[in-house]
Image (cartoon, rainbow, N blue to C red; front, side):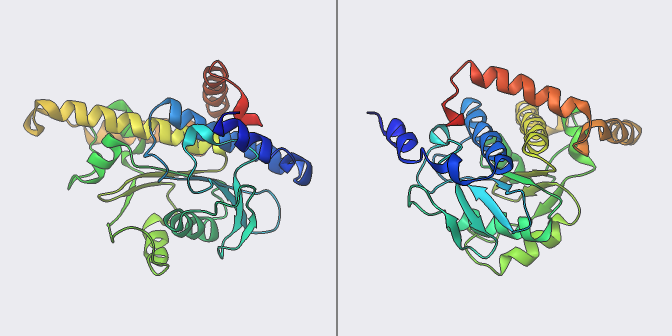
Length: 264
């Protein structure tokens, strides 16, 4: 039996002890992890996606510390509360402290954000290390340029006192670039947060590629164009437009061609 098969087998009864609503969120979050692996957005075992558990409790789901993104399933996600208490840890692996610090802070402060996704991709981290951050040089970037906010690097996110500064910098936005670190998006659903991250990652890919020709050659969009795309992007930025679901459905069709064991 492969290591992944062992993981799936050992968590086979999780579905029986959670609500149907929680199980649905588990499957979607596991799909988001697998899509990130498919798109090569991973940093081994060191970044995190999370989703709030439906219900009155302040519980959220996050990856078990030590699993690769392509090993995440609906059943092996860890349920934790915003104070760090492990509610359900099927594999007994616990969670990464840095993931807890970032994700619990946002879930506590922003109950409207049902999912929070964070990456350390090459191009995302590269843009985060640039003084001017995300530049208005592509259609992709303009969808975020007026909404993106920044949080300065303070070291590996292990200290709880950083939480207040992180959520203060996030404010009422759902698009955060962590300086010298990476990207973070939130959404009213897993589908929404992933759509935001997908476009933001692409904007960073384009920026790094364009900069290969030299920053003095970059063509910035006009203020009029920036304002216009900001208005146009509201069709998906609030997470309520039909385009969010169509985008997610297409991603799931793509993922399912690779396999459906994330649903286990």
